[in-house]
Length: 144
Image (tube, rainbow, N blue to C red):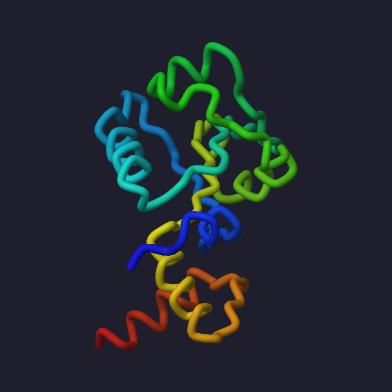
């Protein structure tokens, strides 16, 4: 069942911030896959910023750098939702001189499910962050 469009406009699905280190050659197929997921209403990109990691800082790239690294459909997709300080968290994870795309992604596929639960009287609470190392450890244990 598809949720009422008014309900969908008033609700956000689960959000995720993802940093993707960009390869030196254009990642045309990968960008195409992202755009196809958006077109299929599987996800929505709420912000897309390109960053370059320095020795101790993160620079948000603008202008021609965007046109050189992104497909035309995504140039200008940055909403400013993430401030440079928000992207500083990636500085510790990435090597200096790395260029990465930082995306804020909304997962739309779960919204119809949440709508049905809410219509049945459930309260929906979205929140919390899972530690990746702890999650991988639990998943490894369940696969063993």
